[in-house]
Amino acid sequence: MKFNIPSKSLITFVICLFLFYSYSQETTIQAKEAVEKAIEQANLAKQAYINKRAEEEYKHIESAFLDMFRKANANYVNANAQTCDPFSYVKNLKEDKYVTEGFKSETNYRFQGMFELFLDENRSNLIGSLLDKNKKNLEVEVDKDSFKTLLDKLLSTSSNSKDFIDFISLFTGKSIGDLSKNDLEYLRAQYDKSKGLRAAHLYSAYQYEDYIEYPRKDCSVSVKNSIRETKNKYPNSEWLFTSVIDYDCGCQEGSNQSTLSTAVYKYTGKVTSLSTATNIVFNTSVSNPKLSISNVVCCPEKKEEDSKTSTDEVNFDYDWSGDGFSITVGAGPTIGDEADFFGLTYSAGIGYYQSLTEDFQIGATAGYSRYTGKETDFGFETEGESFIPVMAKASYGFSDVFGAEAGLGYAISTSEGGEGGLTYSVGPFWRPLETVIITINYVNISFGEGSLGAFVLSGRVSLSKK
Image 1 (cartoon, helix red, strand yellow):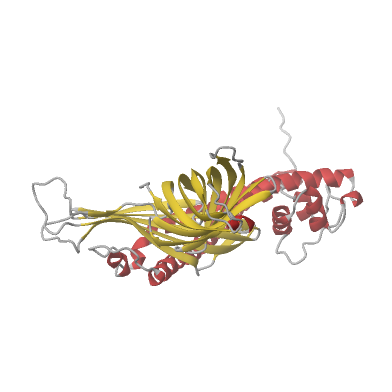
Image 2 (cartoon, one colour):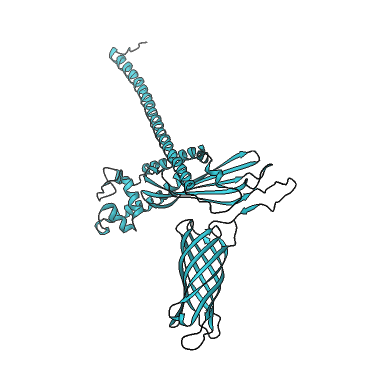
């Protein structure tokens, strides 16, 4: 029996093939490990960037809150005569207690969500053809102009344009008739998508609140900080920073009328920010800082251990905004052409008011108005006219104490043979106390070919409590 022994060349070839295979396998493993290491390093670099930016923005948020506290405390004027001074609690309290580590972790979380949202959208080809040098889907040339990226330009133009036609003009520099059907369909999809993306970006960024409670012996102090966007015109936004401090320490042994029992402090301030596709930077300076103090209860002169309630408590529990029911009385002279026939005007009514924003209120009123008669120059005396005016009201506060209001409605005549008509009022107001508003209104009733006009000085007292 014979065996064919392979030649040396064949043996050499087999060995080389084996060595090449082993080398290629090792190279593949090394390449795979290199890719995994590169991905890991990229993720670490991304997280380091997010942590750095989140830390910076937390510092900005913290500085804005502290600026709000400082300015609001400096501007605050205590208009209430109380046996205890509620402002003494916050004016000497360290302001940095109001901003906690909770905001730092929340800022990191929100910033990472905002960053990854846009990263994912880029991966899923948001304006992909605009970022693609080949421009496979878009025929028109689009320049990013002064924007950092085309994505920033897309978000800016879609946020600030009136409609899709306006967006096309701002984004491409061309009219809608100059673009192909393919380009219009593609840009319409990106326009619609960017609207939702911008809304998601803002929601993922900083619409949140933080609640902290400081336990103390026989006493509790809680703080709720919140940030919410109130205006947006990309890349600029305006935010309302709010901090509500609930102080409830009761009356301990040895307390007296100068001891504060409970109070609620509300700080507000407006902060602006500048944002891009993957970034947002808060201003650290606050505008329009305000502090309002409500629900103030002072301790009695002497604490009775066995008594459940005390008649000596001074409780200012009214809502600063004046929301709810109120009573108004007023009087003033009749003016205009009808002043020859009517003298003094007096009125009384009840109304309900509701705040839509911190400074703006709407309401409805109904009441009774009397225009008294007088001896005329023509030798006879008029009997006067009575009306039931029903009006819708709106008021705006320029500050904590001054503002203006206006009303529109219909005045129903209650005089025999009288005629009703359209009525309106307008004028400034002054708030000397939390629950009292003084107004000077011009009031007019129009009917037929004539009208009744008067200047009325009124006082409005709020009946509602928080």
